[in-house]
Length: 351
Image 1 (spheres, rainbow, N blue to C red):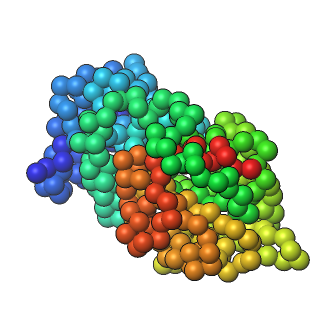
Image 2: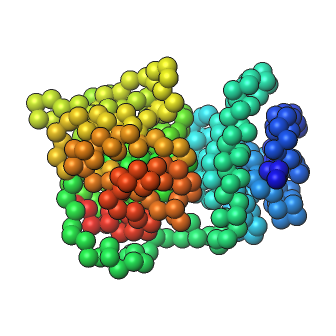
């Protein structure tokens, strides 16, 4: 069955190029195009596409407003296109908060040059986003944007002892920005442990994401810089395009950063960071693997587990993409499988 796509962009050239790229593969069927957000909302309701590609900056109604209205009135999986600037990154994060599933940097040169890699990437991401269509339509459009309840729905979480880890690791990919935001805001200001955050995200986006988390959270959040020390109550976000590793010297732990090397798919790569922690004597570690495609984190979690770390995985129901956490569960590495709500509740007890 073909994947039915609605293309939304105010540029006729971009709409045409995206349509041509998709229709080179019979798996994809472009059922409509729209030049502004208002037209997008109307056509989303009429056509009920499997996925919508959405530009951010458009006349009449911008992409973020259109995402909000679509998710409220006729929910559908949405892939955002964003320019790789600070303002573009902030707008993309707003769109993800509004309900978009994923995003791609708007690389006009790649589209114009007809590069095969860019074409394959676009089709692959649309296919993955489209797989969420039935799930999204089963759920209320506003569920993921409601405030997190103060306590979990399951009773067992309230019976757990208060956790006192020496280091908390949190990793995610698709769906991760919203998931991280929801759970990190529950960590209290008096948190006494350092935190490392790993989110698959382009280099031009991670600084804006760290700044947003810092504004919303009680703890301090910053994009990691080479040599930063692991400090209580400080969350360091791995920069896009870089690999982040932990080193110990004279009883102190710090992070080192290096550029992505040939053969490394992800940057930051969860496996690389997890493995570096496993090599150090940092004490009790909790590693949390959240929503995301692929299996990045599984190999690193195996090494952490051998060293006595506790591994948590997000459950399928609350995951945007149940790939990374599924890999943890199926490898029998998860000590606990929690919903996002339950993770937030556990984080509220961390100190």
